[in-house]
Length: 319
Ligand SMILES: Nc1ncnc2c1ncn2[C@@H]1O[C@H](COP(=O)(O)OP(=O)(O)OP(=O)(O)O)[C@@H](O)[C@H]1O
Ligand SMILES: O=P(O)(O)OC[C@H]1O[C@](O)(CO)[C@@H](O)[C@@H]1O
Ligand SMILES: [Mg+2]
Image (cartoon, rainbow, N blue to C red; front, top):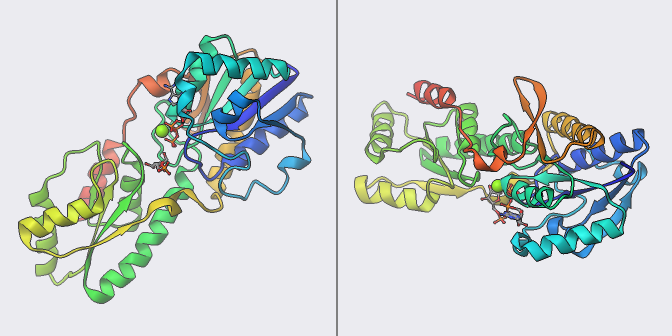
């Protein structure tokens, strides 16, 4: 393989730049040329590429977002559009592709693989919802942003003796909510993977108040419901007022943590190795601290599972 391409797709995630850098530097180390595709699959279709040399990925390892821009390109689901993109890449002598993104991006990647174009996937999403890998690039940074924010919210909650509902991202997965709940000592966490019980949430709030703990933090994953909806349910049933804080897109930004930078560097380099070995339709991941690769189809056909043990622990520690 003489020339490969790299793109970032779906929601951006801190550490994507570190992964791009690793792809470029690992390939250069082996004498392979790399081009960057701008705006995810949009750029793939239009042949919007730029050469990436050693220098062009200097000074980006610490930067959030993605140097290559990202996009949600709905028309990429169409066969003809995918074929148009493959033709553009072949015109530019691109022989393989590294896709950095989430489960949706992998669906697009697999469509290319089925049409004979070699692709390897690198999991990049704050949601940590890609089946087959224990961690995705960006999750650790987003988690730390959430924990820092909740620590700040707790200061004002304590001072005013308020109860807060904090709505966090994660799409259909509860990992951000669950890990943040444990790390920030939240009183209650609602995640899509576990049934919630409104009476229990209210009982916890009331129990706290009777033992003179007048503030409380409830974290709700966006996949369960909006924070404002939960506040209304609590108010309507028990007459208890809560403040709602929606953390929103700050969760996607910021300089990646060291852990995300290391993970991204390992993933990016491994993806290049796989392409060099002639592999395609593989996704890189990490399990039990070991770098792995597996059939990319698993990453969108299987269901992401949250850590049940962590959920139980969170409940035990927040009594
Ligand atoms: N079934 C599909 N076929 C072809 N392409 C797809 C398909 N599903 C998604 N894609 C492509 O992948 C892009 C990104 O998908 P999606 O918006 O689900 O984000 P993601 O990669 O899962 O990342 P995140 O969830 O972190 O935002 C889509 O905009 C589209 O271009
Ligand atoms: O910025 P957008 O396109 O509204 O996407 C928001 C979604 O993207 C993510 O930030 C990443 O997948 C989700 O947590 C969230 O649901
Ligand atoms: Mg996704």
